[in-house]
Image (tube, rainbow, N blue to C red; front, side, top):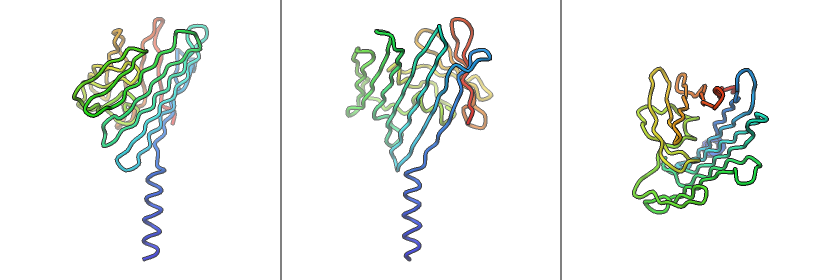
Length: 193
């Protein structure tokens, strides 16, 4: 009996400490210009996702993007997204917080309310599961739903508000690559571990 209790205790602790962590490189042409770390932790019905990315493509761009999301029973409770460049007035942020059946959104100082809905799929989750049969996904940084379209063969196209289209590629349900169009070509995010 004592060994059973000890086994159950160790199992519960292991489940609480279990985390999925994926690392990606951001490439522009043949150059590595940044990295992304995606971490998901699950404890019972609660789930946390943290995405941290750094890009340094001097002289064109340099920024950090951090996204933190809290979910319970697969429903978003809180999302904080912040893009910092180090330049005054160039930073962007968005905070989305569940309040009863609604969400309060603060997107770069503009406040809005998303009424009577559950946010069950977010862009941060794309690092952890293939979005079969999902046609709309919530962007933590934009503070809005964006269209998502399956292109077949594990490819999905996410359309951003300005019309750019990022293409996510999955192999055996795992995100392995993202193509991001830029003014002078495209950046490619590639899974490294």
